[in-house]
Length: 546
Image 1 (tube, helix red, strand yellow):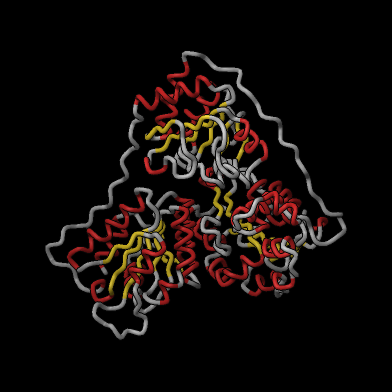
Image 2 (tube, rainbow, N blue to C red; image 1 turned 45 degrees about the vertical axis):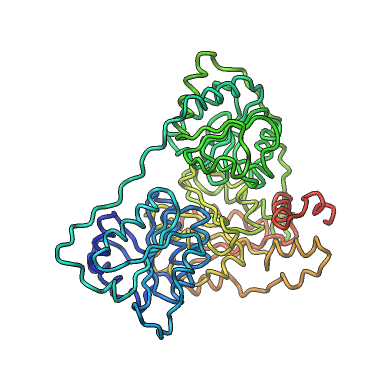
């Protein structure tokens, strides 16, 4: 236990998100007594892991959580699966029942459970291996492989380490990505030189800030539009050639550019069907990624370049510079469909809410968006200029994750306001964590897009010709519930109430919740197409059903 605590300190752990139980109460008390690590007490184990996930996404450091054994661990399932899908660097310290205690009421096969999620499983073998075992989980997450769980039987966790144990050495930082193969670079240069309508698709493999500059310079040389994956939203957003996010939850201009391109340069993105609105179907694909296993996983490339995306972009830029910049091409401008509700009516069209919120927030915003039909509007048009300051939580397709992730973000970006946009059903799944928001007085803006039920299910039932009654729910008054937690709350029932967003946010310093009643019949075609694809149906067929 003391050795694990020392290892956490050596790894630079600043916060542990936890729910205390019999298996981890000694460890958490020791951690707290050091005075060097802050304990954040969640109300549910799912929330604790979601908070660690949010901390990791917004800090760039490992997010650490701890729960007790048995039901404590099983309660983490959805958050752990979400973090795995996002490849988020989450370390979960999960004590196990004592070795050999086959009759313990909380005993179950934790190894099988953890491995079924796709997270790394590492047992704490014995007291003498505590450093090797702890180091292994931190090395795994630092190398970008996703969450890792240290499974620690309590009898091993509480045993003293051998007296001759050396001090813990922190896990090494991951090595730099490989330099690109010259032959593959030659092929990429040839493909880009021959292209007349090139497009660059950028993912999280390209870091924000100065690291992305070679990509922007390459785009200028090629005269190529830049699009990003949703996970890289905000990357190069201020570049004049940026078209924004590609895919179903992106801009029409980005999707049209990819459809019309005769060559797509994919840099550090998976180019899956969601990123590319059904897949890259035409033109030459040049795929650059440091992970050789990423090649061909979703879209079969014509040219594969295994190497660091930024280094490769710089090499391509230098190789193509001799020919000078091209005039380039520009896809047709996106037409704004617009959406509104009569000012004096209730409820409000969700697009109006997003537009009002976008106008009320500063550019240097921290955003978390939950999953669900409402979220399609926010993900499409709520702006971000830095992927390090933006997260969506539907990696696993689960709703109800965003509140926990936003709490973790608030601890990662201490002192900055975080805005979380979630649906009424999403909030009801994580309502208990409003107590955590209030307990720590977090500067969190909670915007609840309230359509009185489960929106996508309502639209899906209607499209199939079924009654929608089972998707409708009359919730208790959400603003009143928030006030019961001690959080100031405001109801927005019609368009004339929307100025409340900017008025309140100009003055509020602590947590605040907006219960925004949106039009339940408003339907986003983009999300309808995504839902149809998830069901294996043609979007056109779904459109005919509507």
